[in-house]
Length: 118
Length: 164
Image (cartoon, rainbow over all chains, first blue to last red):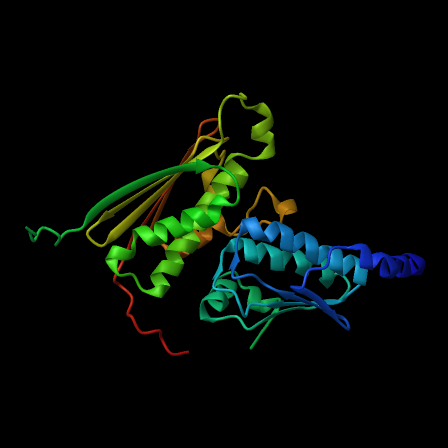
């Protein structure tokens, strides 16, 4: 397990880097696009999972600063990541969400399982 | 010469597009543009865009899923039909696919129920359509396809955003 972890660390350079994904200590920061829909969600989910596995991060932060539109696919991204990392005691955060995004999150009751912050 | 017959606005449009995920953005922007003569608020546009996005996404990933794709006749193309009408201040959006259809509509409309949890679907599609539009009707026949009709009356919310 440990060897695998370091092996992944070393080979990480070979992976496509995306500037919207950043690892800071134990947190994976994901900058969400302007429009979060099913078309974009497939890539975000997959890439976030890659980072979580390779970097072994415990928590995920979704940054909605640029986001002006989100449908239920965005909820799917968050719930999917939450299920993965909560097994290991990780937390999910949503930051910089505007009123509308917050409303979308609240309709699903997500504010009970993730932290919504300014 | 201009006549004053525009007191009751009547308008209709129809688009047919391929059932691929890039068209989700196209569909919701098209409906948002279509509704601009009614002077919708940002809130209303956002609601409409979300609802249209949900309906079209459903058609693409559930109506024409991999299972359906395997069984279909090759010459047919997977397409989504979008039909919108404006009558006075009411927008009606119809989203139709000729895919595999829904076996149990009631169950499908339950919040958090999804047949595709492996694709990270949240099961909130129909719940969102209900929450963001005024009226929602779903008709479906397994093997034939699904029609979703949504209605929204515009001009009911104020222009000013409510204080938090």
